[in-house]
Length: 523
Image (cartoon, rainbow, N blue to C red; front, side):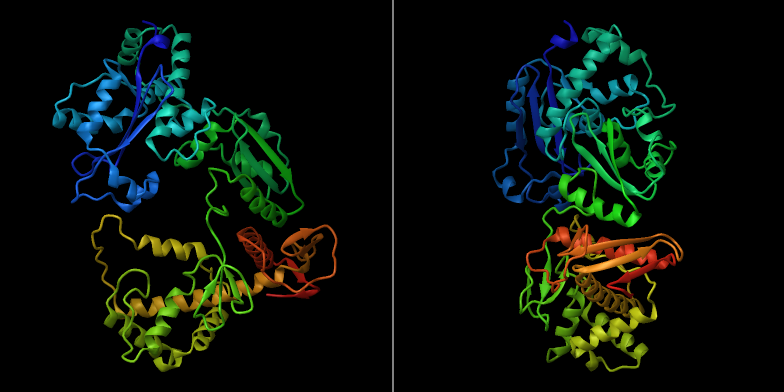
């Protein structure tokens, strides 16, 4: 029978880890080659082997869904009724094979033949930058999406198989036996040089000017948006070298068939355009500056309450998450409590309360101040501003990184991570968190001033001068009367635009350029 007519089924397993024994099958998804329907069934987990939170996050499976999951023997019984005597087509079957072997043995089921599309692709496309399921499906023109669940993997594998069969036929490999013989005799070819689907001319002819570039797929999806000081140099840097390349970027480049660029006057303008374009297209391969489910946070003056909107009561902000002042607020609460017991969750991960207390005492001793001074939030911010003033060039921690730090302290395995910390370590932590709070506070004030302003800047002391006018957080072609700066009605889009603008202005100052805001030089 010809390969194109061969009845097969497409299979994907989602698991709780990398190896059977230490991990279990979490989801089984399959589809027949002559049917459109895709079956996806969650596998019931043993009570003493809960699914790690990291896996739930990666797959998008809600814990509640597992409450109605199906026992694995029942899933395989249904699977075998469906597939009859068909071989399985799996992408990168090297991962699934150990789990299937364990299932065959424990459930006493006969093994079925397995065709690995990754092994075929290695021989047919040795120089393709990426041959993972996302990259290969995109290369063949399949809009792959997020690929979190088994059903999406099955659909992509079906597309990949159909295209590989055509490539095999072109080589005279028309039947299942032909393919098996070819796979056993044709060794995987070593990569010599990456071959990209996008024509070289599209990137080699780019101008050496600032701008924004967008990688585009076969089906017109914007895969990635980036900014550049030199469009020619930045875009072509993606295609240089073989070793140590970012696999995430290689996967994207495997799907990129076209390029769209917009020239800008300066790197600052390209940075502003980039953040707006990322919000507009929500590219799959961008990580930073995506709106997602992010929102703004505003605090009351005494920091006892917060709101997603700025109002008369909540005027301090904006901030991109509620954790920005979490540590110093917990410190303040601890100091004002009757027994001054320190909150063990002061720095996100659980720490000994007495160690926190002794570390804070050492922190105060270094400053020559009494711990009682910091019962006032005003004093905490004042000390943080002193730290910032004494180290103005120190790189500040972005609010998103603070949120990530909190998430990193959440151990997916449920095992406790033993880290020996000293009072000196804790004192250092308090200094860092005081400084972060001050940075965040100053950053919010500076971004607010930028909402309505006129900026004149040059990239060097004697360089050409450029003008930028902002009203309500948006660039305008001409200056108009300024209004009172308020965040009312603004979203994370404006927040990111102002944050990017602030960063770019600081870059210009650091390189001895000129920045005038409303006619004045400001820090």
